[in-house]
Length: 319
Length: 319
Image (cartoon, rainbow over the protein chains, first blue to last red):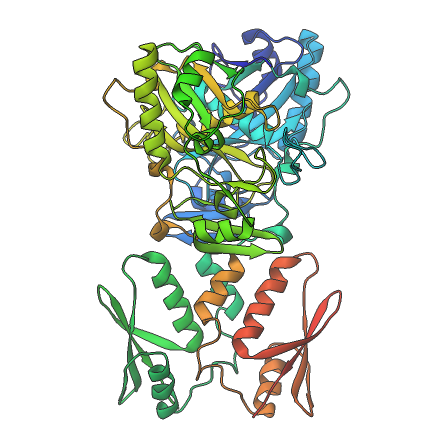
């Protein structure tokens, strides 16, 4: 087994709408059969004229199919292509101030067009990946993933194979395309204006001419199989109805509420406006516990009246 | 700017408890100052004796700090180290049948020990990453990420830097360590018994002797900042209390329920056992809508009596 090399493609200046990106890449890169060319979505978008003026928030809203989660200035959205990412892929870095770069309209089509044109220009049978920078649910920092692909199987599905001990590898399926874009980002960086990388040494993964493979759309987890299609707080609000469904969570008599709280280990007291109860918040659990409590309170029609270091006071209206 | 090479380390046989892994790696790899050595957690665990017999499910439970989400045979768990991953990192592949490999007890410590011992054996100042294979919330397939690190800044935080247009790059923070392990996986594969990879060409990222950096623990998103600390369904169950809090969701008179359903656009009918109502499920939304509905029904004390292609029938008990 041999290794790989990843070489940045330098010498490409600012890319503008209508530029022949494949010709720029072919002139700047030394491409051979079996190479994988990783191109940032930024330059693909610029060449395709996907740069808009105006407010970033308006652009994000236009590109968003659904909001997955929101906290403070951060919006995680499902882009109309199905990609779950911050700000629906709308980017204000490495573009002229006052402009936003949107994702390519169809990044798999962009990758196929680049691959075909690169072959026409150079004679080399390469795979093309269009990369973009994504955050992750449970990990800090970002990695580059493939949002467009042509000429490569984006996932290497091991179903049916066994390891050297004979154990089945049925759930093993490396996301080859995403690992290639991650390797490319290591040599490209973010600030240097290097828009592409040639990965050499994985020729066994490059498909023959005429076969483009499934495209990077095959890397998107279908929404119906997605256990994290909404943030924890957004899931609660969605399930309960926001605003709450009328007719449910109807107010209960104060004595019933006090008895219920007592069974849950909480002390409540009756006031002029209903029942006041102090519920504990575990400070170690931080924001999540608070969001859960907020959502539950919202569902039950409780009103938050005070927040303390380790508890929250809610008022519960009674009929 | 130059590129990188990733070269697999071959010729290391089966690793056993008590083996001097650093000596095996030093003999098999050609290490130089500034190299990054990526080692799979599998061989680190084997050398450290983290292989147990018995049932996989028992091992998963013992390694789990919290269940994040469950669907069918899949359990996403927060491992006691804070890592969110399938089956809490318990692995039955590439180990003798009937045994499970657990994650190293402290992978950052393992990485530091390997780095120091490799320096003693070879004189080379390298960085060491311990890698493992992780799924992702919104994308299919897996990528290798760093669960242990020594001698490298695992995240390249661009806060305070600007791009070539002068735009601030305040949220840009490439997860360098995770991209290095991803590159390594491309040349290692899963079935070939290649337990390590040398990445050459990123010497600018390797810290001087005596500085180990923050470790891979710094890549774990703190639970309090995690918008996806529970699956969508699990978040709902958690917020509502599972089982539901006594005293809430108290049964309502049948006529109130029927009126509430009518306001929501659903037709209900009174039966001997309560109110029967058919609620629509959008078949395009698939599992998620169903899970939401199940959770909401659970909260309100409804009982599912039938499932159809595009609707679900619930029975609602009335007092």
